[in-house]
Image 1 (cartoon, helix red, strand yellow):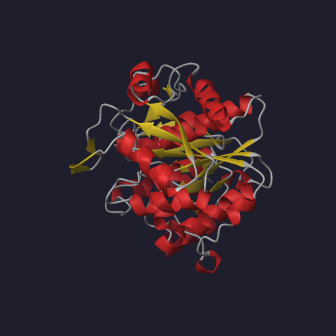
Image 2: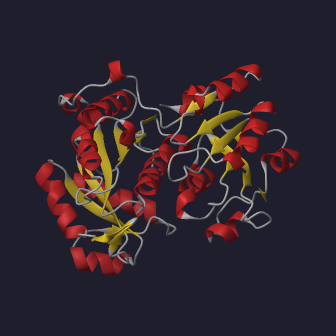
Length: 351
């Protein structure tokens, strides 16, 4: 999926982040607000933080200064020119909360396209499909997998592309893989390269990846093949490709997805995202994190890639000394450019 092809960007947008803005559960809403090249956020719906500033909620002074309101009706009163509603939270259990129904209906009635990251597909529901058709708007379910006749196993066709591939992996879930991927892409573009990037999760698709599939909705046998197809497609127009990874190779719950992305993209280099202060896995407290060294060993054993650098939430100097690898915090002012330089040095590429 490439949402850039479906909209006249940037699209004035309301972000629905009810109950989760600024929290881990609202990371899609947070990512769209901060990074999207498709959706220009004009208001956020979250009754818990309504009236506050986004910079206060996210603890980031660089956050766009837009209103946080209690409902879509309130948002439409403030910014009536909006054209889309992005549902930036996917509640546990996959159901659409009943308290969100009015907000979504009001957005559709006002002529807004709906871009949903929910586990349930609104476009497959007669109520939502009929309402959207009545008001001439579209529903995009970004989690919906490709149709089955477009799925295939990996066949190594990615080896034939004339482009450099950089994959971002991690030591756990939610350690900044998508953010790191986007920041590398942006730094490469600003440096005059010809980069493209690929999303493997819903937030990246909404942010504006050149190709994207939510790979945790793809049958395991076909993960590598769908990633190969995306890399091959993006390589037609770009010679430096950044791929967002998922989870980690040492994660007992999700490692099959990680390995499928690694083998499907078959990268030249890997950037490893790590939170050095985390010892237990997110949502899996019974599992300890194996760490950078184990992850690096597995990546370089299971692929031909070199682990080029660490994208860290910690202190870069400490991580460099600990692991003997370039380590950069992409949230620091020159972090993305420094990380790109480390990757290109490892690849033997110079501007």
